[in-house]
Image (cartoon, rainbow, N blue to C red):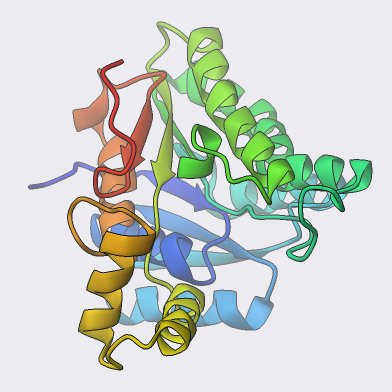
Length: 269
């Protein structure tokens, strides 16, 4: 299926590895020119090099989205490299601090996690959406999390920040209505990364599961993560959904929060 992205220009934040890197590669393979963002210049350069080696076009953009001034610089650098941004994928995010549980999460943690997810996304939208509206085409995809609607008890700042991203997507879709720009959120569930694999392997060792990865994944999916499809997701499966939402084919998908989680969050609404 041709996603009709040839000639489109995309900024993907948090694209130095994982879902972001896979998304950048997917968009480039479909013909888009991609600004690859991350905090590490070395990691960003590696993703850019891999895209170019496969025949795509990509530009490096670095900055810390947890810092407002850096976000402004990222928007400026991406616009300069691409000419304009047709597709904005806000994938960067996470917790400001990984360690604290509920009782130890401070007001500063809440503020920092908000900026690291919804805050910077709003900044980039404010900077880049007006040009999308003027040209009559744009796609904005905010990568939230299953935690946006099914928050964990020990990471309140993360769940709050991801829920804010979903709210931002819906409100922005209404602000930009009728101008050819769509705005959606995507909420991944458990996705295979090196960190998740390491965690599940350590869990399996502690619980006495067989040591092969196939069994560990299946057992974790069924007993811990409760994933109906019986496995965790792959970054390519998230990237392909993002690429679809970025395409003209998704022009009637707007203001949605799409769960890509193997069926964990079933909903009738």
